[in-house]
Image 1 (cartoon, chains in turn orange, red):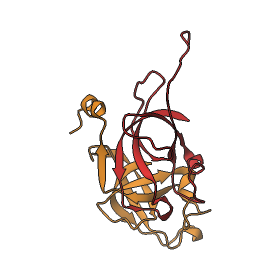
Image 2 (cartoon, one colour):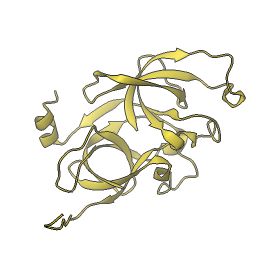
Image 3 (cartoon, rainbow over the protein chains, first blue to last red):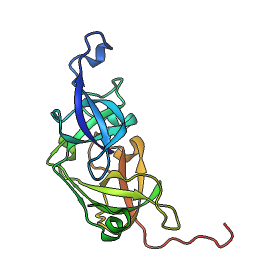
Length: 99
Length: 91
């Protein structure tokens, strides 16, 4: 899974009939310090995320493992809303100079 | 499967319903010589690993297999804690 921030949503009327009722959010990937990275994905929401929230996104065939996305043409799904990141390995923090 | 090092936890109250009892950990992929490879990922813990431990993890849809649920949107899970790694001298 990767970390991302919801930066918007996608409205679509004409789409695969299996996707009717899906909520599509645009998720920008972020790093451990919450800084934006360049890539983003359009992901189906399974937890009720909203704009600005930090979320976890599962990609690939694993994203079809929810009741809604089962057997549907989906390759990214939001599966958790992050409350807090806790990088607790001291040597890693020092090596990467994380704040 | 890949090698990694646990570097921290992710706290998430709101998760997909079947994931409620599982721990999410930050994993930094490493090679056999303990060098870091690429960016950290988030993986579901199925063995009780903690920060500082060297582990191995699986990715893609196979990551759901060790979880005792029918379906879970998980693309990486920790399946073992590494005790030792032996590399041959002439690799």
